Structure formats: C-alpha cells, structure tokens
Length: 255
Image (cartoon, rainbow, N blue to C red; front, side, top):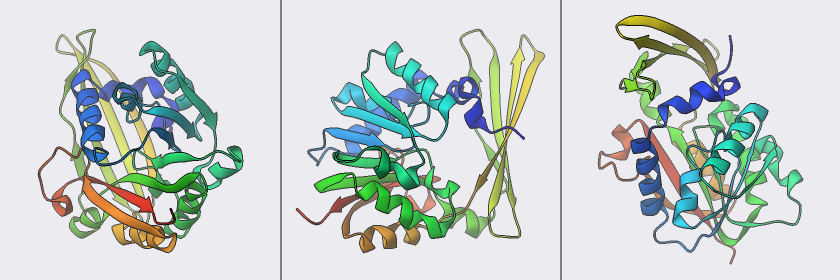
C-alpha cells in the first residue's frame, strides 16, 4: 500500500491556517529561552512543521529521505517567500552530507525517528549531534508511544476540514499492533462535496513504538542535558503524559 509521503498533495491538506498559526506559536514558546538562529531539520517533509519558524526569524536548512516531500517543501517555501537549503538524506547519515557545517539546533520533526527500530535511535541522534555547535541543541517530537502501548488504542480521529473548493475532508487512522512489536498505521482520507462521495485515499505507515526513555537515554549518553519535555504544541496545558504528542529539547553540555 502507498505511503502518505509519496502524496505530498494529500499530506498538506491537514495544515490549515489555524494549524500553521498554532505551529508558529509552539516554536515561539518552545524556544523562547534560547539564542538559536540556525536550524537544521533532518526530517523536514513538506515543511509544514518547520517553515513557520522562518516568520520568527530562524534561518532554515532541511533534509528528508522523500524526494517528493522535498519538492513540496521547496514549493511551500517559495510560496511563502522563505529561503531554505534542502537536500536528500537518511537522518542516520545526515552528517555525511554536511561535513564542516554546524547549527545552533538540529531537529527531527513529525514523529519521524520511530520509523527506525529503537536500536537505531542512538545512531540517528549521534549523526545529528555531529552537526550541533558547542552549546547547541537537539530537538525532537514524537507521538506518546508510552501511552499508546499502555492503552492499546486502535482508532484515532481528526476533526473534519472544509477545503478551499468546498470539499469536506474526514480523516481517521486504524492502528495494528504487530507480533514483532512494531505498529502499522492505516490512514484513511474521505472526501465529500454537496452531500455526495467525492473520493477516498488510503495509506499505510510502519512504526517502531519508541518509549520516551529511549530518546532521553540516548541524548544523555551523547552528553546532552534535557532542558524540556513538553506538549506539542507547547501551548497545550494538558499534562504531558496524558497528551498525544510531546517534544524534547536538549542542550549539548560541551561549551
């Protein structure tokens, strides 16, 4: 079955103006006590979670394994008048593409790290670390896998969205728990206009649930101090352990 990342046109439909505003506010709150300027996102996708940072004055660079998502990111950046350097890379080897460069913050957005097995999380973060300036930061966001594994939730629903052409888009996910401990997310999009069925798209994504301690232990081993574990978006006041999504901001100790 097709991956959603092969259909950047569908992927971006969920990012409305209100969502973009929420993402921009998240970055304002999450990074307000830092002096970060230069940022590399190693799983930038279409840029939906990263490009709003440009409005706050950050200088952006991005990489991704999906060529189609990078093309969409390039178009999105152009449409909003943002300059950004983009390149294709596996985040486990990202340092090999930027020898001699360093950033104030290197990050992985969009719950991307759990695409690899838990044993490879350290490899990915170590590659990111090689591109962090002394005293710089690593940032990541993730689904709350601890909560998912505890509740064994199967269905995940989104609010309906009315698109610009008047089409109503509904989205939901069905989660399969595989015998090997991995999970398959079945993503269903339905489209309706004027009370009539207008189309359906179904995608499949494969994840390796990653408990939070995996991230924290890896960052600690790389000599980072955990500065914050917060909701994503940061403006949500629900307890982190009870929320669907969280992020981690860690600072490199060697100054």
